[in-house]
Picture (tube, rainbow, N blue to C red):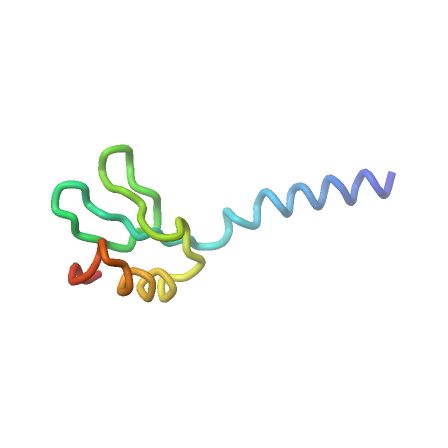
Length: 76
């Protein structure tokens, strides 16, 4: 009984933890080529995620965006 409860609790924690943490994405506009940082993935056709996908904090996304050839000179 205790083992089953711990497994259920672990599953709930594993599923909810990513939803509680903020995620940031480097998104490139397909028309202008300009990169921005967004807190949600872009809608289909509205942008392309570049970089390593989701970043745990905005500073990491900004740092990576500054080193990407696709985003050079586009600001943030």
